[in-house]
Length: 113
Length: 112
Image 1 (tube, chains in turn red, blue):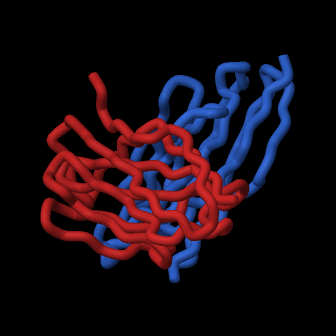
Image 2 (spheres, one colour):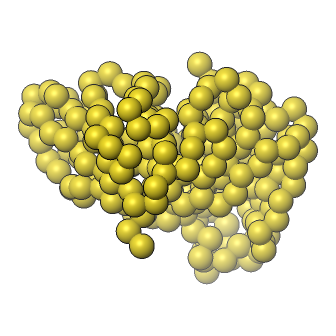
């Protein structure tokens, strides 16, 4: 039972570099999410995709782009990384957005120097 | 925008003592969820509350949703070392689509 799989688990970037975080779920869920977690600030929603073919901004979308490649995959791209984007990133999925639990991946720890 | 505040931020207890974390929203919620994150781990869903005044129990954990649907609490009776972790509430507004707003979390530490 893979659930939600994120890659990479760790990444170190230099300021200005770009990278893409990959996320895939095998639960046939409609909705997918990207959160970032910083100490003492809980989880903040970056972008979400309510269903295949749609994406919407969350609380902190600046500096990020997303792609809902298909029903299984939802990627997060940093075009020009900044030190303020150092964080732990979690991908999550849910059956739908209205009511229902989120299933989280194991997280990707990103450090921007 | 919507804010969800959680208190306390940290709590140290002796094993066997009770623990409570409180969650307050600046707006009325359609539902509230609770998650637990073990150190170094990812958040794991515990429960969802939907109805005003709802109370749900899971073994030693009791969850409450306020009458006004703006606050919630998680109470753990007789804590154990396995309860260690950070507990998050997350609220959803009825007109906010898929957006679930998380509180800052309460980190529980249990001394054996």
